[in-house]
Length: 420
Image 1 (cartoon, rainbow, N blue to C red):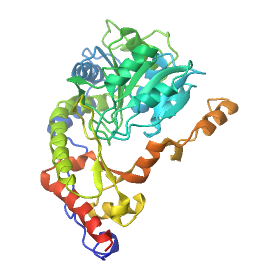
Image 2 (image 1 turned 30 degrees about the vertical axis):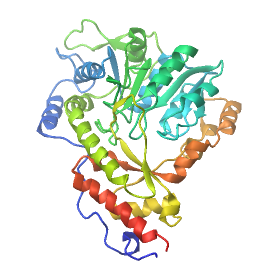
Image 3 (image 1 turned 60 degrees about the vertical axis):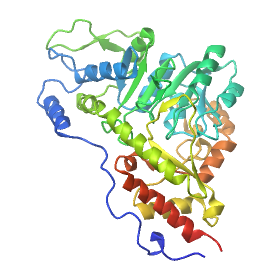
Image 4 (image 1 turned 90 degrees about the vertical axis):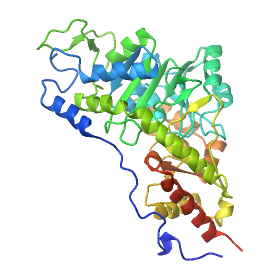
């Protein structure tokens, strides 16, 4: 029978202590920020002060970390996607495949290029874009495939690399939820022609805001450098006291440059990423084992190629009939009250109020209307919307006791809503 012990009904919550703090900083983070503050240069477009900027240092370190030759830092992940698409030659009349379930920055970046986002359904077991559905969606106008490594797993990189090779369609990896994840021993972001990252506060590597685009292709790197700096690039031999950037103008760019404050934070925190990811992975594995014994909940699967994921958001699928037929919104509210943490829904783009192609002011009205009319509900994405909730990565930054609270909260919902 239904009891009255749920936190939303006045009962005591499961979680009474704070979750691990995020974002993180330490004395070294403060030290590098003060170094920028008291220095002569706060942005890469400022005057050269005789040493490599923090932005250049982070770019080199992040490229090296991901096993690629080049990195272009940006103001945010959206800018990283836009310069990646434009560097790949995406423009008016082109189509770009985008997962039907992802953050709105992905299709909006396509619209920013004047191109058409084509929403593609997901693999049921991973909630990443399905390679089979992507193959079906490719047309002569398809210029790129934007795969997103989502939540706590990765897209099938073997399948997508093969598809890109077979069709000649450029592969762009959105790794905003997967910093440091590996597929068969290789970092994600290094498989496609470009890998794009968000460095927003919610991400596992952050400076509050920021982004990065990585590539092994020097021509793509040259284009992305100019696209994010108003057509400028770094001088080969800068002169102290003079601008560090030179005018080139091969690309019509705009200002998407990362500040020195952000770059300094990112350079510092990059050194902690592997250790923090290992903590998340260990706790996620423990949480998965505990949840596997609960009737009515399952977690996402991983392809055999996944060595490590970063668990940006831990996704749990609910059999709502086992929870008294509660809607996913009701489960979200109840679980959030028990754990005192924001719980996320998985909202398909076709239902996301932030994605309305008819408002894309840079396109002709007829194009906007056609894109909006083609936006449709996709069955796997829709099922995820009705069944799945996600937990933020910082709940995995503590101990197994924290994970026990998550299991107890779900068990409490299950007991409270069970029918006799």
